Length: 484
Image 1: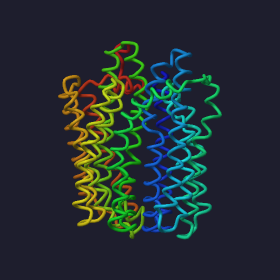
Image 2 (image 1 turned 180 degrees about the horizontal axis):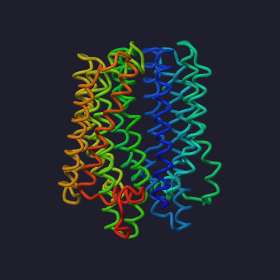
Image 3 (image 1 turned 90 degrees about the vertical axis):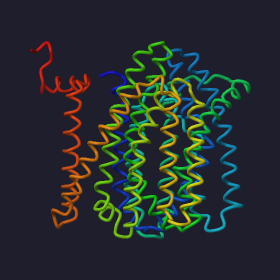
Image 4 (image 1 turned 120 degrees about the vertical axis):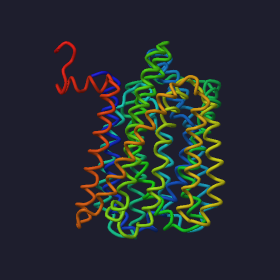
């Protein structure tokens, strides 16, 4: 098995696990701590996450790129790791102190939850996952983080028993992030040699990290700021409704993120070795498969939300249904922009296009939030998210339209959207066939998956997709040329 395939397998296993585990704990947590408890945790986690973003300052993407380019040169690899991590420690420690000041001077209510979040903020000092991503060694990070996730998952059921245990839930989650970052250091010293670095070498990373940080913080405006604004303008219950609706989308989109994370260093390495044709072919394949998965996620969630959310999160979260369905519209655009950004803009170092696109999206999101959240509560945040995600994808694509096979990608976008629409119509038509809600939901999921997969297989065969054809040959479903 090739290195890329191994990395994809390991990272996919991890992403599927972190997709399934929160979905298992979510019904329990939603019922135990309620919509308000979910909202309080989500609000404080969002604030802490902002500090984590400032602490890492674009280092995840930048470090990944620089390590992947120098992975074949031991001296360069050691030099980049030492200087980049030194920069990370300095910035993270400064941000950590600012977070303490935030708790002391700006938190007027109970400080317990923000104080416990200190572990999460502190994890940014030790997180060197970017190094392993750049080295294309996903087995190490995936297995270790998976073990920690499982321990975290079990701890929630063991220790969180009622609404007063919100602080315990927060502690379990925060410690999970902290320990996950620490465990990487057991391995990192075997992979790299520390080199004494100068102030000049450290500071040279400031500009490129800030450039890559701007889109991270701008993107967070319509991924995280939504919940902070809902909490301040409305109440914590509204935050809870939005959190669980969005959770369904973001957790499943982790598959796309995992795929892009695995492929990005590979494309960067191909470009560094002047293998442009291979890099472009890999991008083409990535876009097609990501759109296939993205449309399945969007229309799959939209078609089953009416039944899924009350069963899964409880009757208290029925307001999340319409929010979830509306957010599904953003999934195809998030998928598109994720691939363009991670597999073209960042590897080709077109950082300013990336920066401008997310700034435009962030500004649109903030304006829409101020207009619609006071009127419609949590549902009002959706208008801003729509504007942000669609403008992001459109702007990025427009700026590199001459370098991409745009006609091909738009055709695939439209075809998979049609398949998703057909699946949606069929699922909604069969809704209510069974009187038992859970049986009805399982039936909907099975029929929907069957329809979408069948249509996709027919399309891949019709377009003579070579990767899919090779899978069929290996499975002995069809005969290869040598067997005819």
